Length: 192
Image 1 (cartoon, helix red, strand yellow):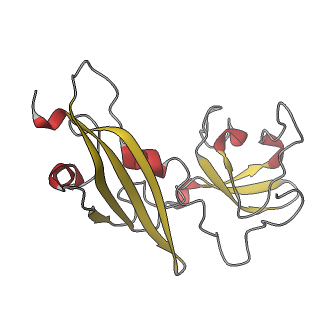
Image 2 (cartoon, one colour):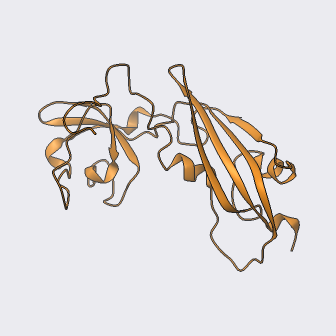
């Protein structure tokens, strides 16, 4: 075993800015493995020697998540969407809001279990324009990490490799960003 198989508790921070508003998504990982788990850029080499200090790196828009593409904008029929829930009232769509992609399963190469977000850009009585780009596809990102606790060398018996930054980015980072000022309908119907 080498010191690279050391486990630690780390804190990870993804900072980004949208329309002059700064956002920070943070998450604690209690069993980060320096040998197996992934960090982007040079963070994987900086973090083990950081002694609890924050280490960070900047990433241009489209480097950590796929870059914005007009090919991810689709116009679909509302009748093709799966808006009926198993329990409860049907989903009511609102421009500017995000919804899980599975409601559009069968359109635009979306599969039934896809929980990644899509944004409703526009809608009329019969169709809706959906945006399948990652919410942060246009944003430069700053990623920072620090070690909270070192747990020593871990026995390696196989296991899962974790891309901890993507865990944060795929868990809803960027959903806070408004589509355009005044274009997101947050306050109608049963919004709360």
